[in-house]
Length: 257
Image (cartoon, rainbow, N blue to C red; front, side):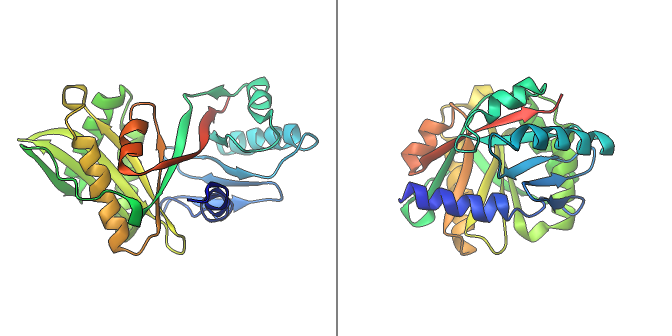
């Protein structure tokens, strides 16, 4: 893989050319940033910026004012190659709080190992309604130790308004949800995004997460997408690397003051 070329394509398709992630959200562009404005329960934030040392501080202040005027908390999604090089420091100086760094990993679908089945005793079901969304949120809360309210609202909105481009799945051991994940397909781009993959602690290390990655990659391949991408945590990065994903850059969410 030509890392620099693929990263430039990702920036162009998925960041500068971002599409809203649900029917209740919109993308706004000005001279130097691309942002998503969603509902109070949706994702609000900056997905791309074109800044330098002379414009960064003013742009940060303007985005804070903009979202404050809407009554929204928001996230500045900072990538490791974004400019200026001290943008993270400037965000912290403006009162933003960084969350844990993740790694943007990308793979060409044709290079992935996709013949991965769930471990014995696990069945994978599609999520199509509110009951399924509740199962996904239950896994999310147990896997990450965070509240699943926003995820419930976001996934319900996506499945209601953009069902063809969002694929969510949950893995069950008997009737117990033990892992869940979703695939977001962005029409007109070459990238499919793997999001929200998590497994409850008692089922980690058994191949459940790996099987859900392969499941979603197979769906992306069947829809004609060339690349799959994921923001990987330290736990998932080794699994993804063994499947054929390669790291391109880092990404850090900075939460608004």
